[in-house]
Amino acid sequence: MKAKEGVVALLNELLTEELTVINQYFLHAKMCKNWGYDRLHHHVLDRSYGEMKDAQRVIDHILYLEGLPNMQKLGTVRIGENVPEQLKADLDKERAMVVLLAKGIQHCVKVGDFTTRHILEDMAKDEEEHIDWIETQLETIDQVGLQNYLSEQIRNEE
Image 1 (cartoon, rainbow, N blue to C red):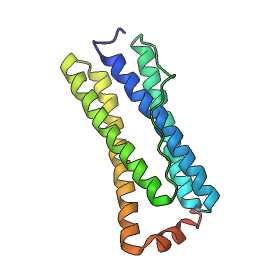
Image 2: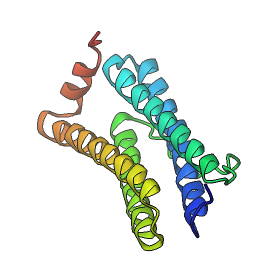
Image 3: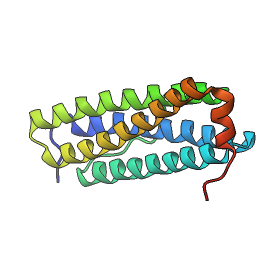
Image 4: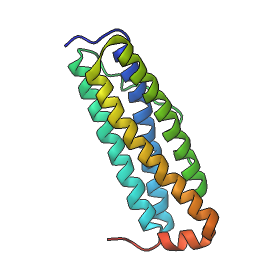
């Protein structure tokens, strides 16, 4: 199926962001593992894997639209030097992703691409759930203090 005007370019922009956050989350997860924060490690690593699935979905859809996925671009990976910095960097990426997805949804409505619109709406819902989780972590840190929060991250949920 041939893509409508501007849709493949928009999806490639989204793919760049997905590839960027995969790397950012993966490194944050590994840093948490190194620090002994197993709960955070598992959660952030799962989020990295979820972003990989999103990237796969975007790639598959670009190919379906007879476009060429651009895997050569990567945005700025922001690495936090401690857990609060990581959470804030990840929150910034999630919020930027929601803005990009909203732009994409509007474009798809304009050009009449309802399949891509549906995919982007599903992705936006996931990103908003990620934002809620991160905001909850930051609020918990504010309420109980960083040391108390981090002491709870040492325990493994499994």
